[in-house]
Image (tube, rainbow over all chains, first blue to last red; front, side):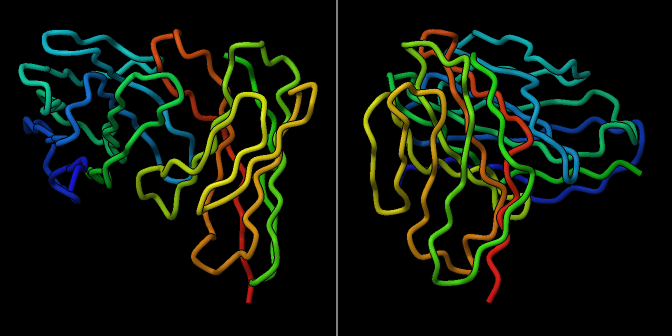
Length: 113
Length: 111
């Protein structure tokens, strides 16, 4: 079944650690996105990609980085985690076709202590 | 993309229709109206979208006014599992295909 997967679902990590949040989709979508959402707050776009080797920053400034080496894979990395990075990170993909919606993963809830 | 206005919260009795309004008075002719919902911090889920005509699928109906300045999402028989934040989004398809989320409407379905 075509879907989008995020791992880990929950992560508690110490300050200064490097972390990578994984996002993979099996739908062959060219476009992928990362959103950040604090509890009870709005979703904000932090990164997006239109295809392999394409990455752009979103509306909300983020210290994270992303890569897109394969169509199905769009990982997000924090080189040195800080408590201010504590949030939920949601990955999404879309075909880019007119009228098509986004498919979201279940998210990674990150806590930096 | 056009800005949308939604009430911050609404209640609905279980089994009754939930009618969620959205105002998008500055919508342009090539902007679609999309609805998503987010259940308790899960990833948002696509519900329905439309351009001019009313639309219906297995989840909901979308009613768009003739002037396209507002729309209503209708959940015909709300259940407790429909409790969620509902987002109304309008966007131009050629604007990089990015979704911008606002505050949405927090729908509480009560027994």
